[in-house]
Length: 362
Image (tube, rainbow, N blue to C red):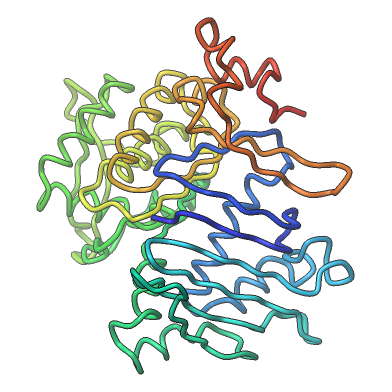
């Protein structure tokens, strides 16, 4: 589990340190930095995939990633603390509008030692050297850091357009993980039905709770290409098959969320940006229960704009994100029980947020 994160110079985050728990719900108005915090993990994912330069290019270049651009910020740095390990890196801009590592280092704090053991990975490189170090020193610090961070996943189910990957047939063997954009929804559900029938049944039962007309998925090989799994579904008391394009956007997103949170092998950290989009209020309440259940087994980090969703959580689960106009930066603050003690018996947390009692409002 990621215990602590320090960020300097990333987008709207000038400088911050934040302790994290198993369940972390970020609330705040639009534009204060919730999505920027989540997007940092997109960058970390790309670093681990050795695709930092692609990420920089697709993000609009260096100025879009550095706090107020290169004229204000000369370096972006991140420190991630988890278990007995730390992964720390700093990135600096180059003349050709990209970022290179000015520092990359792993630490291991051994029990009984006052100073941590460190593995410095060098400077001036364009992509992470975690892989090189792991090959040279297998089962050492860099190897453990790499294996851990590879299992932190950011999920986005916002694209439900006609061409969305989640609506397409999927390769039958693409089932080792549930992909962050649900591109392998068909093959992953097929895999669960074949190998993890109880998880599959739990997913179906949960979908029934929100959409009682839904009977089951119809998962079969595409008759024109046996390598592909086609995702269809049936209504109750009907022999007709419907394809994914007949699902509403909210229904399809809910199916993806349920599949993610009820899978047998959860990622070690799950990140979701506004998962409530398009969901019925009752589906949002169920989503909160699924997030709590997942957090009993793994780490969950969620940003939200939903009062209904926030109402389902305790004060200690909430991180209030605001903007300090004087310092022109995002701020992150854990909500404390004493902040809500005089109100909580009468109102839910979401109601207090809506009334601007706990901050995080425009």
